[in-house]
Image 1 (cartoon, rainbow, N blue to C red):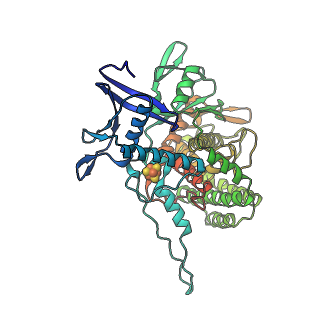
Image 2 (image 1 turned 135 degrees about the horizontal axis):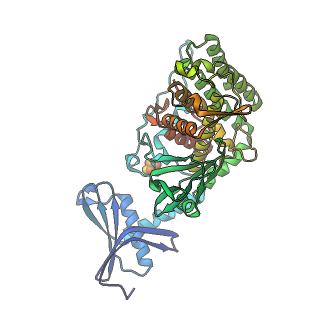
Image 3 (image 1 turned 60 degrees about the horizontal axis):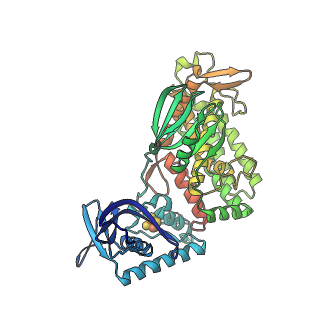
Length: 516
Ligand code: SF4
């Protein structure tokens, strides 16, 4: 435009090209003598080419596109600059006709890929992946590894030898083991959550109790009578931080998320396959067998004297679950395994001797709920509620509809898919957190109240259990398929993403998580 000033530096400039249907978000735009130059900031280092320092091809294409958008908005734009932070160097690229044509072709290809309605497979062993910001979503090595582990042909066992173990592709540990963001739990009745710029303020009457930066949390959990302002909801939605609602007793009943549900193709596949009995049964077999296997492992590791008959029968039920012909049969097997497992659960409860002396001790006669009738059942119910919430959050993060499941059939208000994914993790996360809370004295009989025939946690008891649960979620475990260590919280998302790969046809079978 004619009224352009002689010299200007403008940050975070956003312009669009309607012709190409693209938006360019430019880190910096420099104006000198009527010429406009886009400047992009990159973390890495420039490429060393035969003529000196160069831009990487993807950086070049991105910058050329910014040039096209600037030109289409009436600016004179002859070159672009990338500033590489690692080496602190600026590298220029001239916007030649050939470069601009190549960038336009790439955009055409990108639109054609989007129109095809199928996400292309990830790159194989690419050196680009370690530096890619999408690696935690894309899971390139995990997808190939899980796919190949299942499709590797087995040698015929002509001479009665053991079948050959599939050779596993090496999976680079590209995913960070733990997220830096933490969940926020608000448990004190009557507090209010407000927002001041990017900070949540938790107040009781007019007293400020706590301030939390929105950029440091991954979810907000409101237990019971906790109010939240519209401004806080808006800020959390914008930042992609889900708000989860629980009753005071810990019943998970709702979630608010922003408009982040972009992967409509995945949901279409989910709806289609949820109607297919063969698919639902095949997936449910793996989930139920995985759950029973993990229950057996927990008993074996923690029971004061694991009964060989129980372990043997659970093993038998794993085999039966893997061969089950229908969802009804699986429900029966799962119920029988649960009776066996919870029948021996008491042997894993080993609190301090002095705790036993108190009135409401940790006796456990089997699983009961709605309402729980003893302290251990109250803790188990809260643990499952928190886990259902975390898998609902993971389902939304991946792009699933958490209400359409495969093993758990749809029912009004039930996050059926989250409950499906949760099955193998019940013993490993919720039950294990309960055992830690009781056996280490984090929760004591004083943390419960008895009302009629039911038992509920006090506010202090809930707080103590949240700590035990988060401790468990933060524990690092080795993934049996990928051989790297990640926290349980990270694992829930990885497993949900692997299920998405199954629905998209990239992996034949869901690689259920079991501990050794
Ligand atoms: S992580 Fe995925 S999106 Fe990123 S470069 Fe690798 S294959 Fe491509």
